[in-house]
Image (cartoon, rainbow, N blue to C red; front, side, top):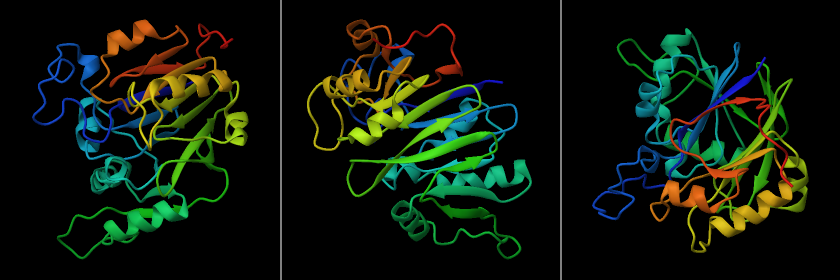
Length: 267
């Protein structure tokens, strides 16, 4: 039994193309340079989970014809990672019940402040509001046949990455990061897939640049590694040609099956 990984969004906080920008990437005809805000959809025959609900969440669900969702997992409460959450209500109808949402305590507090009207019981007649079971996480947890291990990394007030394990495979997902501990690196080591923040070529105070991200990925030594949360400084084809084969930029709509028997461990 495998896990399908769908990159619903791989862009930075403003998305690509940016409003009012006429640079070569924002006007590119390469569809891999069109990037919604970052999120990833994981599915097995029995379980379907989205990590983060960016402002593009509804658009992403329609584009990839996603009609099954068992839970939402959040990394942090920056606008580009959770402001599409209200559209979870359509999945209440499709799935026929309450949808659980998982987040660390700091992130959960902010999500519940912004979406203060969301609760677990139906609203009064005539109102169509999400039904959510909010679950704070302080330790590993399971959703169906997927095990999530929260990993705190450096990025603003709070950012939680995840190691996700399945019976036959494992992956890490850290879309926003400017620093990662040795303990976290050891936890992520040797996985089938590692997804890490790789914002741009130039340094940034809250994100890994390409060089820093590659350095960390070399320490993690996953069988395959992908960069996400990419800004308009990056042309997909150019960066793909500059990176080693086992470390590549992700792009919106990329689908992977784990385990991927064609991937070789990083040196």
